[in-house]
Length: 454
Image 1: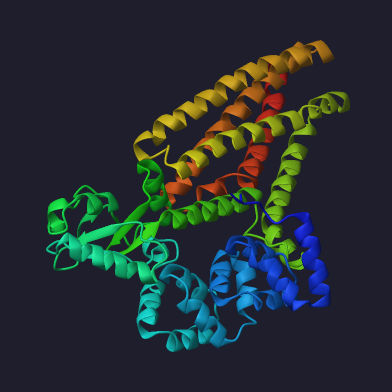
Image 2: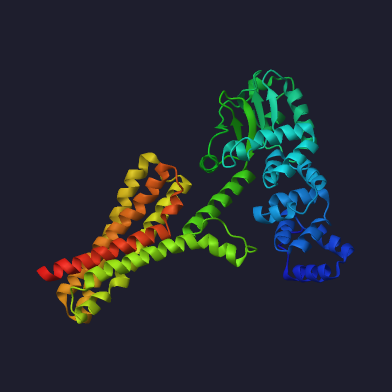
């Protein structure tokens, strides 16, 4: 038995050496043993000229499967140098969902040319899928399904399955439809094998199934698959007619896409970056959030300048010792709370009925931790500076700032979700900048007022 192993360092050394000499025969042999997904990884990490050259050495079937596995940016660069006739061959060899993804990466004029040249039936399927938004069930489904009328005999259904197997790589589910094409049940391979061939399909169909409308957001589809352990999900129109199916590999792509998008939001970038992006492009992508952070820092400096003028130098210096502590702890608890809420929203653990309870819980946790840490900080300041009053003010400020940060970190993602915005935007620079400004205002305001009274 030969176990799967990723391409080794020796493989990459051999690849570089053979590319340098353009040894076509040996390169074909080296690449022949790779899985299309590994071929995609190899192509993504090559320079553009080498990528095009290697792509031309693998067969059409491997080309189509490899390009379907490539990251979007690398795939777009490769498609931009291929001839329209080559792209036509790739599209015709792909399932409708992968073919649609590929066509979406093309320039409008090239896409129209390709759709005109491919098989008319395939062109109609791709055009239908292009009409759906990319992030919906319709946008990620494949239209290749095995649909069996409920009035047919099981023997006829088996023959339909055989015919489909000649053109489709995978047939994860057989669907049962009525005369109007409406989905009425599903048919497992087990039931097809165990029942008599002359039985009607409608008699043995499983009537308990889950389907989704084509307009449903892909995140909700992914949550449905996770919650109910589904392998395939049928997609229907407004009246229940079967349109296509979403398989587990599509759901895994959704999870990867959504996770990447959330990480981009968390990092404060506008869009996902590629290793091939130029320094200028990456800088332009990250700069807006950094400018917002700078504005927040400048505002914090202004807030500080408005308060410290009322203190003597020695007292102002001692007060400034704890500014980083207040700001850092507020930022930390805000990130903890927001990350917890964002994760809960993404996985479906937090839904509308439970959101208020989770909000209260996160605020309570933040407040409890704030009280404990405030007591610890009070003790540290008392032992260090010997100023019990200052220690009390610092501890009080920390407790209030951390509690406020917990409220902001927990509530803002829920507000964003209700407004239809990405909750991940509420984390990272947004939360930290807000909590820095408010935490500093709380601390300096408290020291200005309370130190004069106590």
